[in-house]
Length: 89
Image (cartoon, rainbow, N blue to C red; front, side, top):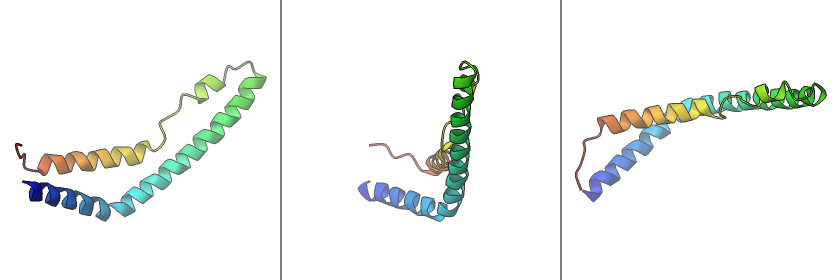
């Protein structure tokens, strides 16, 4: 039972390692999106300060940083869990 869990963890880590290039690409996309969102937020805050804070609230309600990478990791882990045999303790 312990060795089965070790094999599962090893297999999961091996799979994640094989998907590393995809995760790196998604992380770069997320960093680019985060940078764009930060620039828009700073611009919005500046404009909002000058325009009575009307524009800044809309800018600050942007997407969550690293949503693409988190989504891909969760998707892959769900697939791995769906294909693993269930072992009762």
